Image 1: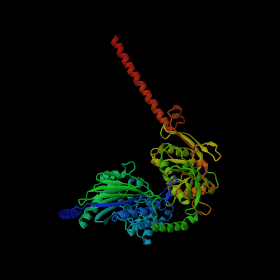
Image 2 (image 1 turned 180 degrees about the vertical axis):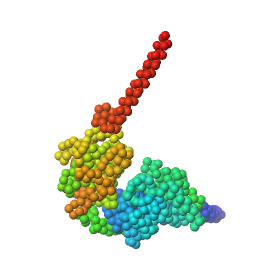
Image 3 (image 1 turned 120 degrees about the vertical axis):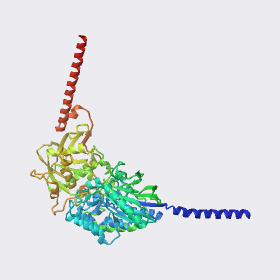
Image 4 (image 1 turned 135 degrees about the horizontal axis):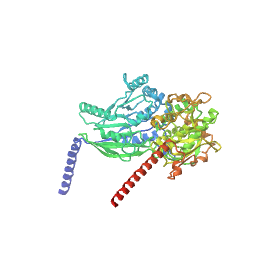
Length: 637
């Protein structure tokens, strides 16, 4: 009996100790803050299939993953770091329906920010999208943006467009930051645009204010407000569209310069960080693109404001997850709206199967790899050339595209209209359109030289062509790497490129603008001038006048050219695209003949400098020899 009594007493003492310990832990102020995050969703609302036939992403699956995390952590917040639009057929209703923001609202996002691609439909398109979102009456995420703002009266770039954007910001409620309380934790969430992101949105009409200065201003202001209003230290989160590629990019520098940021959700570079980067007391996290992952960062937050990463993971969004029926139903409704408002003009269906693909094409990321030929690049440019010739009724000498505008690859298995649109969704004010212009033979050769000399240091400038066959030695002088270039006709015959002759070229309007800016970006060392059929230069701002249109005046889109080309193949992708066909030969050689054949001015200058240096060395050696010989003679005397 006494033994039982002692056991009961021990149990009671243990319970009392546990009860005493619990308030002590609570009073310490330690709490777990769970942050769920995405970025670079790019309108990828539907699941997609990669070049290996594997399924990934999709908002209905993403919703299932979000719900599972919120079931575990009811006080979790959900945020996004920008580029939520532009990348699938849903973007065609961007300005009128604001599908992306309405879907994010339905999924429970607390906040997002703008990425550079939110400006692809120009300022008027962004303003229309924001107003459409508000008019829908649907739940919407807060939008935060502190350093990328429309000009005000008296500032450079102030215009009617900036007035429209400012009014739309006010209508939606775009703010520098928001204060949010969840589970007893106060969050400061602010948005930031990076330097490279701004450079990738040349038509945004916005002013980019200094990133670090703007961030520090917001952190100080919002922290002071939280202390004054709630007597609490906030957990500060930056939704940054700047990037973490290669570890120490803009967001790393931001964390170094700004004090008080606890977590940076880093978008723009499509990075998937398996482990957070920590610098200056700030954790930097990224979850990749296209809803391939849902990021989860769990931080232990103390009353004194100190933060430590407790748990971190990237949750794969794949076909092991069930699809949320509510989000799936919304998706189907929006698909039908896109078919009626957009695809009906082109005679295609959203999920229409165009062709079967038995070949593993390289991924969109791999196509950025410098100095190689590509079956995917060949297929796309062949499609542009074929569609242009069919529409214009005249031969096309050259079609080209760039790695920077190829957003997806061709999946194995069924290839649908939706898959093809994802490949070529970029545009200026609209999804990609084909333009027809002319280049001199000299400029055509310079195009190939850009591919050979510029793309190793600028992977978005990797060019792919239809209509030429060329080779280059990677060891040759920069801007003179190409040692052979010929036109390749439809029948496989080759023809010389004449410097002063005009050649008809076809490319996307986006790439056409890039060609026109080569001179300024190369500091005048290279020049490519798009021209009209008379040889007169075409200003970049007038390229839209050279968009290819069918007999009904409908612009020929890049995606439409690819889809039509695939459909006419008769069911299976042509076997000639099973591997690169040799239209671009890349090699490395120290052979003097290979290094110095067909020299241009850059190689001639180098050779002249080398000869001059050799002569100077010879003179110096001769002087030294004569001086030593004279000393020897004097000693002998």
